[in-house]
Image (cartoon, rainbow, N blue to C red; front, side):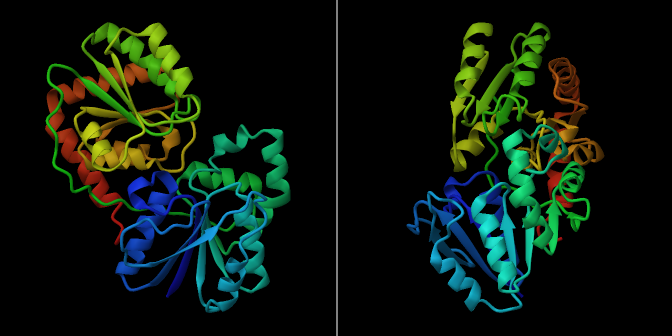
Length: 356
C-alpha cells in the first residue's frame, strides 16, 4: 500500500513535539509492516537535517501567502499512483485546505486527522474568525475527506458540530515504551511533573497552580516541575514569583530527547488537567517511564487511566479538583508506588501498541 503523510513543521525527530512526533512514529511503523510510506513536510527550512529513516521524506518550501503552495507539490500529486492514500494532519491550516483541493481535483483519496483540534470544548470556544474560517474552508476539507480519524470521543462530537455527516472513526495513535534508564527519584520530596505547551487555559495550568497551592498546605515538601514553553510563559512565571516560595516550583523551559526524559523520570507523578486535547503524548510518555498521572476527562485518556488503575481522573479543570486528585494520588503512591508504576507501563503496552 502506498501512503503519503503531509504535515507542517519540523522534520527532525530530535526536535519534534506533539503532532509531528506522532506522524513520524506512524510513518515508521507503517513502513515496518511493509507499506510504501512517504512523509511530506511543508516548512520554512527545507534543509534535510535529520538522520536516516525507513521511509522517504520530501520537504517543500512554505509560503507567507499560506494558501499558495510550492508548485512541486502539485506535480508530486499528479505523479503519484491513483491508489495512493494521502493522510493530512492538523487543523485550520490554509496549506492543507489547498492540498485537499488538489487531491480532489486529481481524484486522490485522503484521510484527515485533526489531532485534538476539533475537540468539543474547542468548538464551543471558537471565536468569530475561527467560525468564519470553518464555514468557508475547513468544512469543505472535511466534506472531501474519505475518513476523519478522531483520537477521542470528544473530538468525534466536535467534528459532528462542523459537519454532521462527517465520516468519522475513533482510533487513538500508538506509543512505544521508551527505552530509557530509570533515574533515581528526587529524595525526601513528592515531585509532580508537567510537560507540554505553556498555555494557561488550554493545558489547565491555572488549575495546576491553584491546586498545587492548596496541596502545599497538606504536603509542604511537595515540588512541581514544569517543562515546556509557550505564549503564557511570562504569565505563569509571574504567578510563581508572586504566590510561591523559592524552590517550590521549578521551571525548566523547553527540553528534548534524553534531557527531557531524565527530568520527567526523576519525578513521582505526572499532571495534565487539560480543558481541550486530542490525545496527549506527554501522558503516554510519562506512563511509559512509569509515572502515574492526574488527568481530566477532556484529555481522552481518562478511561485508560481508570481501567489500569494508573492514576486519577478528575471531571473538569478546576483547582479544587486538582488538589483533591493530587491528595488521592499521593496516598495511592505512598502505599502502592511500584504497582502504580507497573500499571502505567502496562497501559501503554496493551492499549497503545503500534502493531495492534
